[in-house]
Image (cartoon, rainbow, N blue to C red; front, side):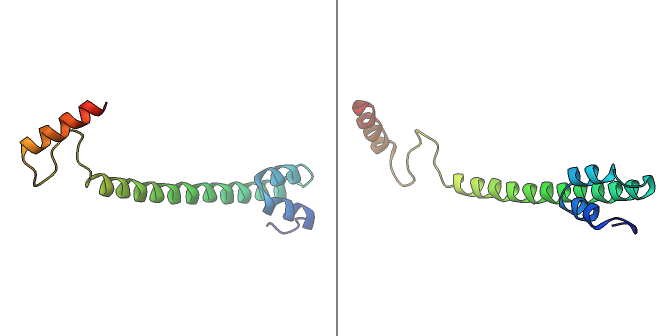
Length: 98
């Protein structure tokens, strides 16, 4: 916080960007500009950190999904180790149930 900032304004500026904007209206222009600049920089840094964290988490989820789905057979494909005759019998039974 800039020097000369009243404690109430400094506290409001630390809490939120809206608090800093509200407190800046009651401060001298030079102090208000410094307070707003620091508050905007802190807000932007927080948003960047949140976006980066979200991107890393999303990439992790995507890798987990790809790894999990890699083990799933496409619908209608015979299981490994079965002949096509066994597959057609299994498919016919499944069609009969529907």
